[in-house]
Image 1 (spheres, rainbow, N blue to C red):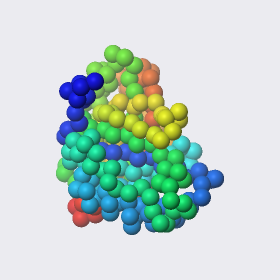
Image 2 (image 1 turned 30 degrees about the horizontal axis):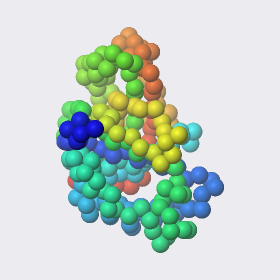
Image 3 (image 1 turned 120 degrees about the vertical axis):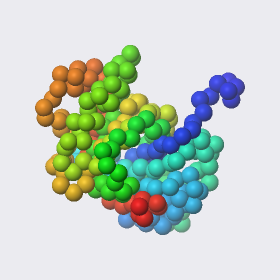
Image 4 (image 1 turned 90 degrees about the horizontal axis):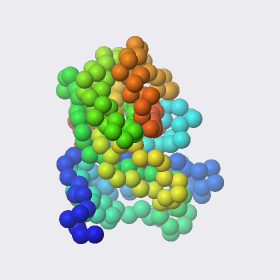
Length: 241
């Protein structure tokens, strides 16, 4: 295949990293966090590719991924060019000389920006809690799902207590060291951000009232991956915005 046939990444987007440390792992949560805070995250930010980053913890202990990182990227092209591959994934802190992937379960998803919806401009780091809502439409259902977001759901979400903004993304890449365990592709991703005064619990619940259009969209999607996450840490530009 020629290079011209490979879709080129460009424009703003995010890297979404999901992490779980198995009970059998030789790496403790404490050492992992030290590595993230003192080695890996500074390395990512030093590349200039990632400008802001956040670490989240799942509100529900039942969700399959308990830790999630979101890295905000102004331009996806350097990622495709391999500019992040220079950031070490090994450390003297680890039990062995192997990479962090030897001790954790991780899945990486990369998304391009599709829509930013906000009614007033808020600081980048304003949210304390987010709803991660991912959906995979059935073939041919993309147009209706896109219209549902733009014409109804964004507005309805903005009326909820504590809502800050909604940012939507389109899936472009997914990777997991053990490909046999890779999750289903989730093409439509919405990050709904909330701050002080929100009424979110541990699990994602449908908005009230549930409209006919919402019922239709939910019944027609092939897969849904949704969870509530609490912000644990902010890194980079987000800490000064």
